[in-house]
Length: 144
Ligand SMILES: [Cu+2]
Image 1 (cartoon, protein in one colour):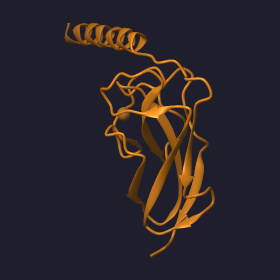
Image 2 (cartoon, protein in one colour):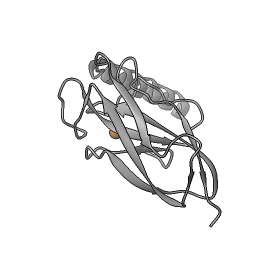
Image 3 (tube, helix red, strand yellow):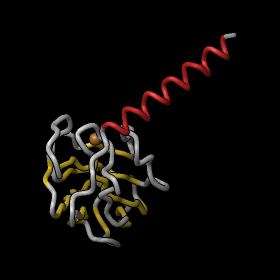
Image 4 (cartoon, helix red, strand yellow):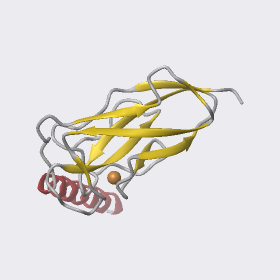
């Protein structure tokens, strides 16, 4: 009985979140492009370094603010594959939100190779359709 109730609950929760996402999708603004200004692909960086976010043909708006052709940055760190592009992005160490409208951040990573990628999300953290996604770059953090 409990299991059936749980499955029912999951089904309701899933349909709710799909319906929620459908009502909150934002279209890809014409000519939009997001990219990492620095570091450059292949760069060797200190343990703590600054990542600068570049955005073309779109504006940055804080999370919660619904303005056409805007969004806020998400930094994908060492993320395998891509998140679900039709749902609000999760908050994690690998998916960092800049809901304040920040255009750069300082991060600290362990020595070795890491991948970085930017993904724009709209006012409810859902990627645009199609997504405004940067190239994935690889940096090497110095061993000290
Ligand atoms: Cu977000």
